[in-house]
Amino acid sequence: MRKFGLIGFPLGHSFSKKYFTAKFERENIQGCRFDLYEIPKIGDFEDVLKENPELEGIAVTIPYKQQVIPFLDTLDSACKVIGAVNCIKIKNQKLTGYNTDYIGFKHSLEIWIGNHKPKALVLGTGGASKAVMQALKDLGIQYLSVSRSPSGNQISYQDLKENPSILKQHHLIINSTPLGTYPKVEGMPDIPIDQLTSKHLIYDLVYNPSETTLMKACINAGGKSKNGQDMLELQAEAAWKIWNE
Image (cartoon, rainbow, N blue to C red):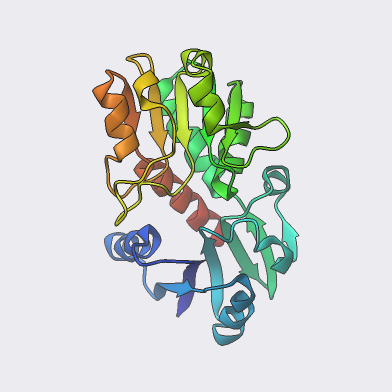
C-alpha cells in the first residue's frame, strides 16, 4: 500500500483527504491511501514518520509550512527562494521539500486576470503568503505585504485605514490568512471594506466557504472575487506529480 498524508493543525475540514480519495477512485489508482495527521506541535512530525515508514509523500498546511523545514534533508531550489514548504517527497529515507502553493496560485491568478497587472496587497505573513509573493514577483506585479505586526517593508492594517490612497492604488487584494474559514465564516482580515470599489479584485485563498465575508464585501462594492478552490486543486496535482517522479 502506497501511503500519503497531510500534517497540520487543525485538520477537521481538510481539502486534501477528500480530493485525493476521490482522485484515486475516479482515476482507478489502486493501492494508494491518503491520511490526515493532525499534530498539535511540529515535534510530533517525527512520530508520524516513525509510525508510518511507508509514507512516500506528505502535504503540509497551517501552521507548519515554515516550521517543518528543519526536519527536511533538502529543499527544491525554487522552494529555497520561497522559504516555505507545503509538499514533502520521501524517497530512500530522504525528505525533500517543495512548494506547490506557488504553482497553484501563479497559474490560477494568470487564468483569472490575464495580462492585467494591478498593484496588489498581500494580507498575512504565513507560509502561503511567501508563495503568493514569489508568484507576484515572477508575474511582474508590484505588491505590499500587510501584517498585524509589521516589520521591514510591511505595512499594517491601521495604515490601510489611515491612508485611503493605498487601497485606491492597489486593486488586487490577496487574503493568505485563514480568516473566514469554516466554521468561523464571519471572520475576515481587518481591512476598511468601505474603501472597496468596482475596480477591486479579491483573491481569497480560503475555499470553504466558497464565498467568504471578504469576498462578499468586494462583490457588494461592485468588484470581483474568487476563492482558493482551483489553486488547491492545481497544487494538489503538482504534488501528485512530484510524488510520482
